[in-house]
Image (cartoon, rainbow, N blue to C red; front, side, top):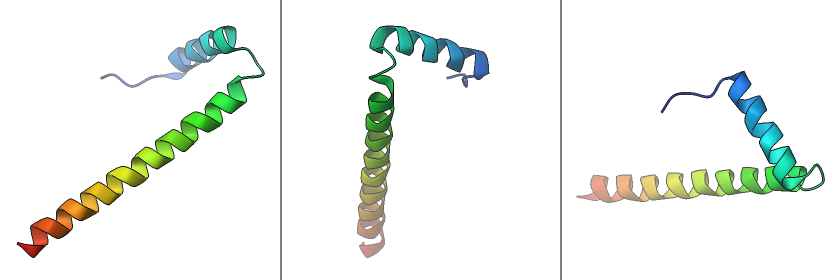
Length: 57
């Protein structure tokens, strides 16, 4: 998957601004950030548990 550059991010931002409006955008950003944080936390916990199982064998 290719990485996103500045022009692509600007286009995505403007589309989101048009679809959701300026009042909803900060709330959506916060929710997205929280979701990503929780996903990373869960991934680390699963990885830690798998490593502990592997080391105990």
